[in-house]
Length: 155
Image (cartoon, rainbow, N blue to C red; front, side, top):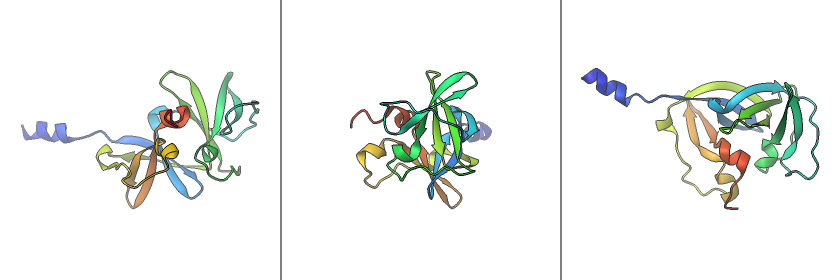
């Protein structure tokens, strides 16, 4: 009976890919990640939102590419050797790419240790954050992928 109670209490950890944007670390739920590719030529698309930098051809599929730096109101992207495009597959099977400065590692985070921010955040950017995860001494801002892609409908 005690073994059964211990199994019920065990919560599945969630895997996140930790990426860097500037000096900050962000976590992307690995269930959404389809691929990670090196930076490549991006074809601009006129009259798109300012945070969409264009599209790439990935194995015959046209994938829109978003600058997370622009999306979050940070300084413009500087492409370096560590710059990567994280290809995200949404629940409706559509794909979008996120430009990140660097891909760090994959970590397991217990959902019970994730905290919602208690401080006041900029309303527009607050919706992009699912919570703050702790891994050792590091704090990782966990992204709400749906909100990042779709934007805050209330703004």
